Length: 412
Ligand SMILES: NC(=O)c1ccc[n+]([C@@H]2O[C@H](COP(=O)([O-])OP(=O)(O)OC[C@H]3O[C@@H](n4cnc5c(N)ncnc54)[C@H](O)[C@@H]3O)[C@@H](O)[C@H]2O)c1
Image 1 (cartoon, rainbow, N blue to C red):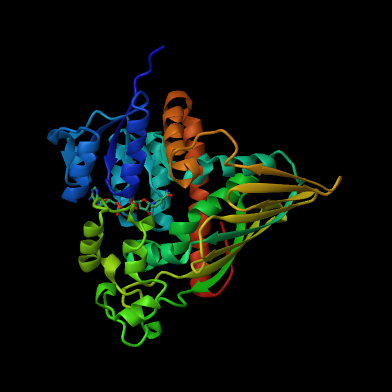
Image 2: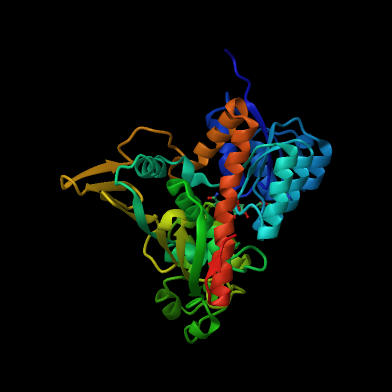
């Protein structure tokens, strides 16, 4: 049987838009990109070339793309955080299904508006919780839900942001200023909250949270440091762990969001863009550490720490059950059984499974799920997928409210 590829319009051809669209390059029989809405000419041209899009399938803004009513089944909304709700509501009204980047919206009220629209239009809205589609977290979910360690009593979870990633994204970059984007606990940890809800299959009832911005502040700026790293005296710059020279010129890990990743391109970017700024001279207000305690139905407790000052990333989890314990380092899961005192180890790298994309295979995994849901899923399945994503956002907003109020928040 021949199956025609799903047709997708991409709104926002930055890092995420390019990543999801690259599925179509690897699996052209399953996905076809039929248009792009993107105001930045360099990003738009790059994307249009990648996907051989004619000029009439390129627009500088999502509104113009919408007005043209492209023949697409789904729209991937990959715009900055502040620009999710309006295009999402409008494309739903026009009858499109959505792959909507997280966070779905910037406040709980906005999430509820979206929920109403999803129910009214009965479209699929798959929110970008890519971790659900990785081998590693799927296995962890399967072990917990399958009762491998008995009843879960509590979970200890660490989201190590990594000091370079914190400087890149949450100080200099898109998410440093929460008034322009969203609180870091929503932005970074709606993934983690989504995982807890998914693993446990339970609702969260109460939340308390503490945290703040400890280090990336003007008063911590070393004497003599310049406003931009390229202008910083060598003796000061050499000693700075967050130097943009070190992060972007001496290594290429954080070149991925930029279209021109050459040394010359990076040097120009450091001269002119926000990414060349001293971390102590930015307009950032995002926290750099936040701890959240959660109480789930059935009395299950979860303690979650988001921490910027770690050497590497990779979520770490300990799940404590009545019959055993699971310890996960982001790659391997160690399963300790109490009854016979045995330990087994499951290694995601040794397991065959969908991979070949970022976020442990989750970036392509979610596109596969979009295609699967649109081919096989019922409207009830579509709604269930969206409703589960709502829970993670509800927890994140409650955590931020608790942090700001220095008090516990009950989730209604
Ligand atoms: N699911 C995940 O794991 C994950 C990871 C990183 C980022 N994100 C989220 O994805 C979204 C995009 O992040 P990114 O890293 O790709 O950012 P980005 O800055 O690389 O890309 C955003 C793009 O949207 C474009 N844009 C701005 N206004 C627009 C408009 N009116 N119409 C169309 N396009 C417009 C920008 O020019 C830019 O190219 C953010 O909300 C972010 O929080 C999700």
